[in-house]
Each structure stands twice: as structure tokens, then as C-alpha cells.
Length: 327
Image (tube, rainbow, N blue to C red; front, side):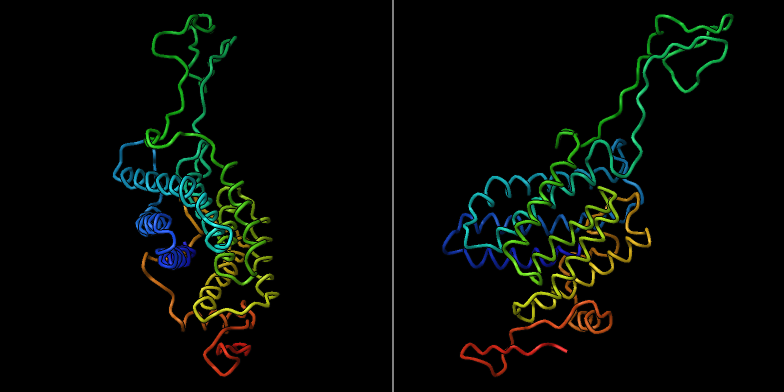
């Protein structure tokens, strides 16, 4: 996911910043950071698989189990330890915590939801009464009489209604519909981001970008995803707050990805049968970071990101700030 690098960067910064004042919270931030790095690598591998069959014992099952297990452990740490301990003055960490919670539910919907958001559900067979000479071959619950054509009562042994097989990771996480919980988490994270962070803040853009991907891939709402991405870019245009060079580069990358999301939504190529997180073409390898020339190309070449006030080391006030805008 394009937001992985941004989330991991801020997780490391917050963990280091509060290491002396709150070492317990800092330790869990470091744990979630390490878990996020491992999970990002496995999500990249999962995206390369054309089809992930979670009901058969294939080589991809171990990868599937690792993704579910890591996501489950990360969600436990976020909900039980990090969110309750984040103080009100750490607004950025608060928004990031709620965003990470929504991200883990996003993974559950992609890889462990029932019914699946990517594959057609296996139909359940129910006993039916078939009168007449024709045989209903769409059901295995009834069998035609070779002489009269009537159903056989009672059912022969072994022909009971077929139940839908459960995913093999059911022992790790209950198999249910996680869409309502995921939608609620994304709505809450987006509300906190809008209320607490500026429109050009990288964490706020990270929330909006993954929310747009979730709406398209899981809710199949292309119009809603496009409108959300457009509004996020408009908020960047209207932002008046300053930012340093690192935040500007992160914002440039995320705004570019939002623009690409809009194009994919309009062309109808933003989703496929392969579970994805963050949208197609937006998942760099773990540990990789976009280069400055690429960010400059996105800003100047694409014309998506407006001129933003930045904090520089030039001549300004006592703090060495300048209100010059990038060109």
C-alpha cells in the first residue's frame, strides 16, 4: 500500500518521541511497526497471486494464514493497548491509531470475509420436490424415479444438503462479515482526520487514500470512492498550514496516488479478483521510499498538488521559517 511507508515512518517517530515519557506505549508502537513491515512484504506477495483459494491446502495457504494472524495480532495491540493509552495532545498518533485499526479490518474483508467480496459464493443446496417426468439436475437433493419420474423419499444416505466450506484460517479468526465493522472504523478514522489534522497532512491523506481503495475494492462503490478522492485533493488545495520538506514529499506522493485512483475508478480498472490493499500499483516493497525527483515529477508534471507553504531553513523569523511557496 502506498500509505505503508508513511504510516511506518510516523510510527517510528512517535515511538522514539515518547520513549522516555511513556515507555509502555512506545514498546507497543515499535511492535506494531515491526508487524507492519512484515505484513507489507506478505501483502506484496499475495497481490502477485492470481487467485488465492482459502479452502484448499495449497502452497499459498501458509501466506494466507500469516496475513490473517499478523493482522489479528496487530488489531489486538491497537484496540487493547495503543488507542486507550493515547493522550489527547497526541492528535497525530490518535488519528494514525484509528487508521491502522481500519487497515486491519480492511485486510479481514479482503482475505477472510464471508461472503467473499471477490469470489462468487458457493450456492447451498436445499431439498426440493420435483414432480413430473423431467429431472432437476440443478439440485442433488432429489433423484428422479426411472419409471414414474417422481422424487425419491426419503433422501438416500450421503445426499444431504451441502454446506459451504469454511476458510482454512477459521481457527485463527471467526468467519463472518467484517464489512460493517470495517466501514465504521474507516468512517471514524476519517472523522478524526478531518477534525484534528490539516487537509495537506500526510496522515490525513493516508486515511483518505486507503478509504477510497476500501470503497472501491470492498464496497464496489466507484462513485463514492472517486468523490472522496476528489474532496481529499481539494482539501490539499485549500490547506493554509505549513509543512516541512519530508511531509511535503509524502503529501505529493499520496496526492498523486489519489489522482491515479480517480483515473482507475473512471476507467473501471481499479479492482480485480485478486485481493488488494490500497489499490493496484500502489504497493511498494517494504523499506522502499520514493525518491525526491519522482516526487518533483508528480508535483510539476502531473499538476495535481498545488503550491503549498513549507518550512525551510531560509531567512524568515527567529525560528528560521519562511512562507515562500514551492514552484
